[in-house]
Image 1: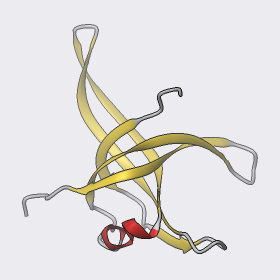
Image 2: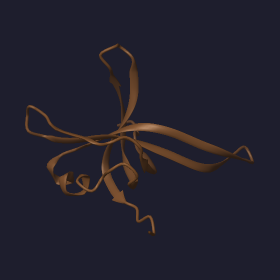
Image 3: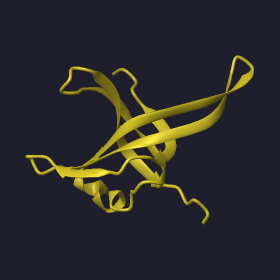
Image 4: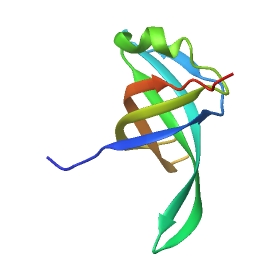
Length: 105
């Protein structure tokens, strides 16, 4: 098996869309914005990305009800390519582990 794991933390920046597939599987889709300071080749640099996320399955329904714009999350899962109706492809994180991060407020 080829490795495909991604762990990313960030803030939900687009309103989550909750749907149920024709086969009855609940899905929660949103966009996560990540910002951090990373070291590369001995230099500090800003890292930034926005990544679409999908959380599927009834075992995640309770936690996904708490996800709104501004929620801080730590996610782990696999990435896959999704093709839009216009033919363009985008990477999507299929989250399998979700942790709400307390903002300290």
